Image 1: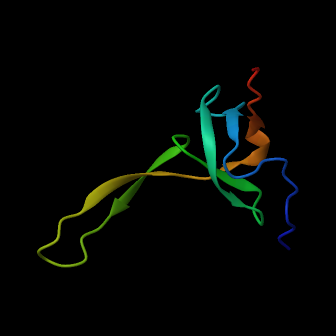
Image 2: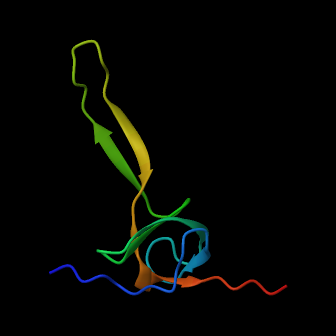
Length: 81
């Protein structure tokens, strides 16, 4: 079923998005999901999470969270020193 993806990306690496809505943006890898082949990148691929109030005195809210992006849509950003 879920085959582990082989990725050249490690946590802490700086990557560049090569396709999708956030194309050409640069960010840092903060989490890797090996089973799905996706990575979580700081400041990339924001989604809105609508949270319903659970009690009467609570109010609902909209949270902005970073969603995982597939590793094939990014490349390692090699900085020249």
